[in-house]
Amino acid sequence: MLQVENLCKSYGAVRALAGMSFTALDGQITTLLGANGSGKTSTLRCLVGLVRPDTGRVLVDGIAVERDAKAARRRLGWFPDSFGLYPRLTVREHLRYFGRLHGLAGPALEAAITGAIATLALDDIADRRTDGFSTGQSMKVALARALVHAPQNLVLDEPTRGLDIMSVRLLRETLRRLKAEGRCILLSSHVLAEVESLSDRVVCVAAGRTVADGSPAELMRQTGTASLEDAFVRLVA
Picture 1 (cartoon, rainbow, N blue to C red):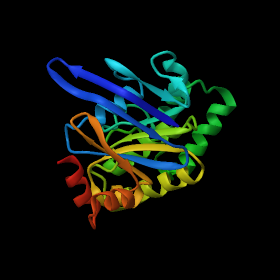
Picture 2 (picture 1 turned 30 degrees about the vertical axis):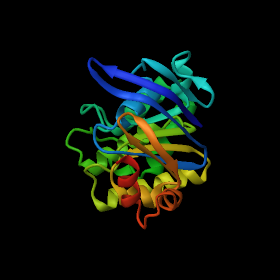
Picture 3 (picture 1 turned 60 degrees about the horizontal axis):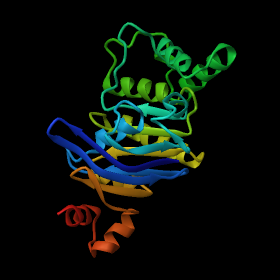
C-alpha cells in the first residue's frame, strides 16, 4: 500500500505540489490523471525517494520514505517516464545490476533474473546490449528491471508513452496479472481510454493537489456525466 499525505513541493517560484494526498491499495490499479504540469511526476518522484518534499510524507507499506528510504525502495518497483537504459549493458546485465542494488545475490539473484526474462519473453534478446533497441524492447527491459526484486508496489510514470499496440497490450496484461497477485500498482497518465480500461481508482490531479478520487464509474456518477473525459473536465474546471 502507498500513502501520500499532504505533499508540498516548490522548485524556486514554481509550486509543483500543493497538498497532494491519496492512498493506493494492494490488489488495485490506481491512476493519477491530470494534464501536463499538474504535479503527477513530482508526486511519483517524491514517492520513490528521488525528490524530497518540502512538507508532507510518503509511506510505502507503512515505511516512511524520508526515514528509511532504503527499506522503502526494496518494496518499490520504479518505471520512469524515460527508460534510462545503459546502452553498453545487456538485458541480463541490467537485471543483475538492479537486482544487486535491491539486495539480491547468489542463486536467488540468478533465479530472479531468469524469472523476469521469462515473464516478459526476453529470452531472444537477453544477452544483447540494449543499444539500438526499439521502444517496445526498451519498455520490456525497463519493466523487467522494475520487477526483478519482486516488489509489492509498482510505480509507473506514463508507461505507454510512445509504445506500439502490441507493446501496450503486453504492458496492460502484465499490470493486470500483477494486480491479480495482490500487488499495489500506481501509474500516471493523461490517456483517458487507458485510464478507464485499467483503473480501479482514479485520482484526479490539478494544480498540484487531489481534486477527486474514486472509480471511473463513481466519478461519472458524482459529476452526472456519461464519460470519464467529461467527468474529469468538470472536476478540474
